[in-house]
Length: 282
Image 1 (spheres, one colour):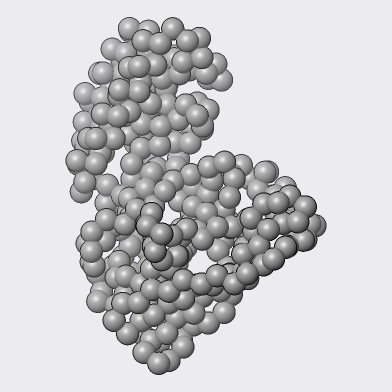
Image 2 (cartoon, rainbow, N blue to C red):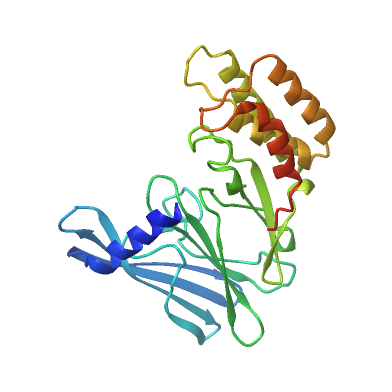
């Protein structure tokens, strides 16, 4: 979400108190070993807008018979009543909280996935990591991206997208957000995308097909810069910078670099190259 828009939305949220109709309690639980987590909230409907709302988001974590965490759950960038708690899976029985080991230790973490509401932003993964005496709360805003867990235990990673590419070279609709894979290590995220060349190659192929389709299109609004940027990002991560630059220059010579008019296409390749060579902290 654009910073100015976020400020406006936050200000409105402070000024407008929704009139909820028929709020009902909802809860979901997950367990692994002796650790049990339960997330709960009140689901209702705004009487004025008729939009679904949730309030009073709370999380309880038990270790055996002992409650070690109980109370409200604040998710950065996901304000009630529009915040949504996503299920981990598409099945009707999929839990809205997940107890699962996702880092190198043997202790299961507690995960909550939330969506801020709106057209396409933002997704936040909330991880509660046991330190031996209490739960450390680690949150990450994945922006416009999804989050999919791959692997098990110490090998678990989070597949998402590189949100830096949204609006970077063209409009959001024309942007290609390349795949990105992160791992959680001691409460910090590490980019491990290069360890998944198959994912990078498949995403690059899809971006290339889109770019070529837009290149051949006779639509005056056809844009290729976003797809070419996403393709190149994957190529660079695969160690193919030199060949990627040669291919982009060939596409430029063929007249296939089409922008939306907001920036000159003549500087696209040099700008993209500088961008892709910058450090991309996880």
